[in-house]
Amino acid sequence: MKEERDIKENKGRLSGEAEIDEALELLRQMEAVDKRRGYERVVRPVKSRLRRLRMWRRVASVAAVFATVAVGVGVWKTSEPVDMPVTVATIDSIVPGRPTARLVLADRREVLLDTLSSGRVAQSSGVAIRKEGEKVIYEASSEKSASRVEYNELLVPCGGEYDIVLEDGTRVWMNADSRLRYPVAFRGKERRVYLEGEAYFEVERDTSRPFVVETERQAIRVLGTSFDVNAYPGDELHYTVLAQGSVAVGDKRTGEERVLSPGEQLVFNVESGGVIVERVDVGQAVAWKDGMFVFDGLTLDQIMTKLARWYNVTVFFRNAGADELVFKGNLPRYADFHAVLEVLEKSSDVRFDVNGHVVTVNL
Image (cartoon, rainbow, N blue to C red; front, top):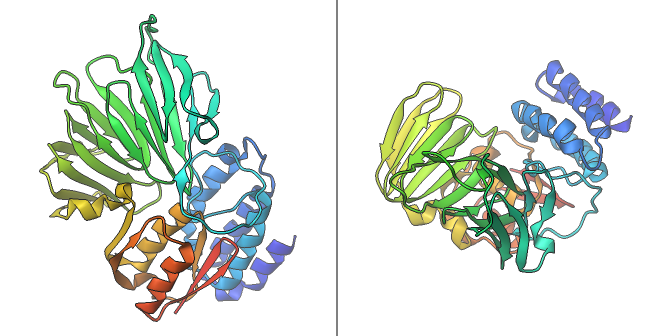
């Protein structure tokens, strides 16, 4: 196929024959994607492997190849939406994220929340599930609850955000490209949920039942407090920022635990297991929840990763070193995408080429 020929022709400009051979195999798999179930079967594992290849750091000619493939199976981003079904997409304008999410019930029924008006969505395990504005709310009802624990999932795609109020009253703000798995009704001696991506939690206090947020490598245990967890699969660093109360952040492999005080951030290196605890401006650290981007000493690589998730775009770096440029400043989260790029251009020597939903960074 044409994409294979294009990659083969660029082998000399890439770092490693093995990476190119693997990229070719990934492209063949992408062609086999089933529109409805293909993401779980093919694209999800492909996404993980491409992160290890870090193909977005390669030359722009390869970016064009991947952009061609993306049109056939949905807009292919630096970070794919978590478990969202793959559909054929057309290239349209780049717009900020909006409230959109998919609710997967315990019986595997799926509800596209942004297509519904406010009102009751479902009933499960004695809990009424309803939509109110731009959030989904779980409320204990008078109906008899099931004895077994049933789990729902809320999946927010790239270019999305959503709020949820759990059965115990805990409120969760979910950022783009995130997944939360949680019991419909909390039972037993703890309240445990599972997170991929980023979310801000305001935990309803219950001294008899600690609240635990479990991620890929960590478990964050609290009684009642407010904190942010940023733990995207494939990211080198995961963050926990405490706004109020107290949290204990534990490494699931070693069992080591660190207790945070308000205003502290724990930075966890997924590969090495290293931990750094530092003081931060909490307002800046969780500004995404309140509609702002705060780039306080972030590299361009970190900034473009955030923009890729929020604006639903693919980002490629053409020049070595461009991704390491450091920026500082605040930008409205709902600003026009091209206006955001213009601000970055005016404050540096970097330049952006935008073709559809593909952004190439030049230096």
